[in-house]
Length: 114
Length: 110
Image (tube, each protein chain N blue to C red):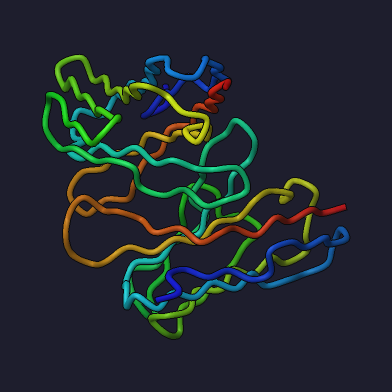
């Protein structure tokens, strides 16, 4: 199993540009999450999904959109990039059942908006 | 008040020392307590979890939970340079989402 994969690893965007961060998992996990991590600020939840076709906002959803058409994929869309979106983005997944809710993280995407 | 508070550090200790990492929380509903380790430029990975008050050991690592004080700790014995990482506490109840601490950056000096 590849686990959780994310592409790209790095990206530099100009203000106002758009991009999609890709996330895929091959563990047949229903729950998937997008976080951003800023220095000293921990992980902040952007969006999450409990299954294909179902998404919901997290703590910091403004400026982002998601879709979940399959169990495996959970892309994050940035529209009109702003410098405040400079961050490291992590995708994670967890099985539907069982506690505790161990989340499996991808390697992250480092995004800089200039 | 944040639901989970964690001292951000950074924390530097000599090799072989005992390390204590701590989190406090305010939501008494939290049932499951985890510690994630995050190496530089990597994603977090689960190190340990526990769901009851008391201690849980795994090799050089001990997770401690005191629900009456809403306080959790991670102890690392005989610390090694390979333990240098950021440690994040996390907790949840039922099927709710994880709530993370802000992380403590730890450096073990050879």
